[in-house]
Image: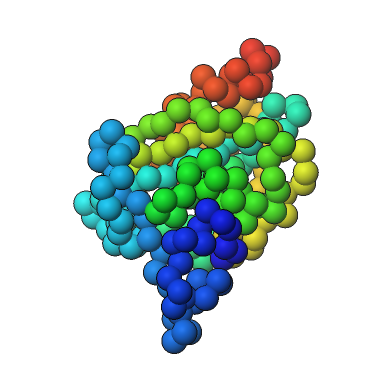
Length: 206
């Protein structure tokens, strides 16, 4: 995983820049634990934070649209241990401890999709508790929302993303009824709708 200035301080001197320890074992991914107001209270390893009943941690969700007002969806890679093969919003993830959510959203969008948004704006926060029946993991998240525009064609990382698609609001309704989506998708979409409508205009149907 590439190291940015925002994340370099979080990597131990004994861990190389690609996130691997001298032993060759991948370094644990740490998440930022928060209280109900979103204030940082500690850290936890990623998988441990998602094991039932879950520990409340900081996350982000990105919704990118093309110039026609279509939402970029991603279908999560089949090899992912959490919610594999389901459709979800453009990008979602977790800031490194101490990393600003906006920086994390921009970084992870490029890492997963190979694109940088031409516009990215904050769209509020939402707190939720969503168990994932398939994996038994739990999403206890304080989620920072972002909306924006993308003009370049996605170049998804196959280890992260199975496929992508741009959909209108009407097409999303049909897709959501016919295909599995992430447990958190509708929660974050509904929370981001006011900002999405401001971005796409009344004719977008969002």
